[in-house]
Length: 574
Ligand SMILES: *[C@@H]1O[C@H](CO)[C@@H](O)[C@H](O)[C@H]1NC(C)=O
Ligand SMILES: *[C@@H]1O[C@H](CO)[C@@H](O)[C@H](O)[C@H]1NC(C)=O
Ligand SMILES: *[C@@H]1O[C@H](CO)[C@@H](O)[C@H](O)[C@H]1NC(C)=O
Image 1 (tube, helix red, strand yellow):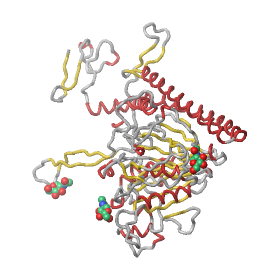
Image 2 (image 1 turned 30 degrees about the vertical axis):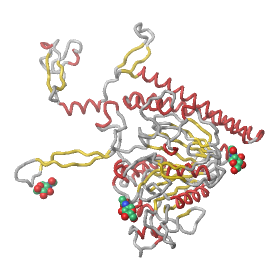
Image 3 (image 1 turned 90 degrees about the vertical axis):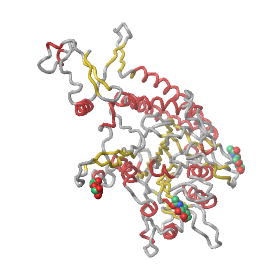
Image 4 (image 1 turned 90 degrees about the horizontal axis):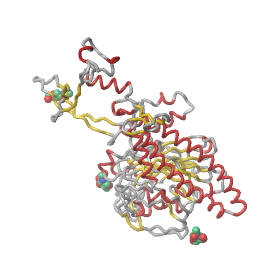
């Protein structure tokens, strides 16, 4: 998700990653959807819409812009927690953008993809119902966003991918009315399989006579033909949704498909998979080039694509004058990313009653450095540190006021501390997250057991009350724990030292260890600066480091070097 203008469509559209797991492909027999909502302006919270909440004013999730009012249509709506509901339906997404003429180009359209997700969770129980609801909402009120891949799963264990793109402004019905809404294809993921999408459309050709596994808009080919995107004479059965509506380009492959390639490479039973598709989505190691800084960080600052002015000597010019030329480069787009607002891994357990079917594990920041809190889809309340409304509710969330009481801020503190000293902090943080995850997974098993007993003996209400309490207490406990963790990491990794306990040290009961620099960093410094920092004459405290022949006579001489006002290197002898 998340970009505002046409300009950002080019530079920052590459966001969000989804993984879809079918029950036959998971150890526990659960369907799973993992979704990272990646945007630097998205405040992390778990949205909650109580049953029968009536939502009629629609605001664009990405921009907060008011799009219009819709009819309530139904009195009964379902309890929605994050991206799941009390019937066990879960919906995620990633934005593929797609062809310019159809992306963000439907005048008076009232429903954006974010609102579409939450409106649908309020109204649908199963994936087929959800697809029907989404199509109804888009076609009735217009579709205001760009091309989207949606992930859907329900309590029966069905997992689907649905891809949509708007009909634009120029499709008309027989009565001469502009036809609003979107064209789309939805395919069920075969049981035993895993799918993923990351800002690049994935559905290519699709079957027309298999409605239990594939649904589509009747005019999905027609609209492409109308806009000149598909040859009217071509075989409609050869029509590939992804190739026509979102043709692959370099960035789509290298920053979108490369993430999918990375996911599949790690889980594929076929050892040749990674090699086979490497050309398609070329991936590199992240934590070794100069961008990794002094502390082997896999993170890179945005923008993902950047330009460099280079002086190129042009041999065909008579005077050997240098020509300036601009070359574009890009950063690797990792799955876990600093700008994630919130993310979840939803487990949908077909063997549980629908009220207990979904447990979503929520993080309020970067999916690699933030802890996950389990929340049941039927919960009636969310722990305070995780509550909040979003731009889809017409609410502006402040991102300039640090608030210790909010999980988003505390999790960001820990993550950012980790980014600053990645090689030292990340292993410690990883252990904390893994231990917490193991502990909470055990707890959820126990809570499932008790909730099931309550469900059978006292009914759904008692079970829902119990899992609500569990979610609230766990959320509060994890928030407290993360506050303490930030304090502990701060104390331990301070001022470029690693402070370790040492009881017999009377000053502080500790020792300040110097982690130094990696061999790779040292080599790079020497490569770039040559002899500039070479200890040419040594000093009395480091006799073993003496270089060269004149070492003896120069004991006691110190060199300092740095930059003068003009940025030129200078060396001074004190
Ligand atoms: C929601 O409204 C329906 C009637 O439309 C009612 O049967 C149901 O009990 C209501 N649910 C809640 C939680 O109020
Ligand atoms: C939006 O749609 C109109 C009507 O089809 C078209 O003329 C216009 O070029 C489209 N805008 C973009 C940016 O492609
Ligand atoms: C070198 O300069 C010539 C003459 O201006 C130009 O046609 C050519 O494109 C330049 N080559 C490069 C590599 O910039």
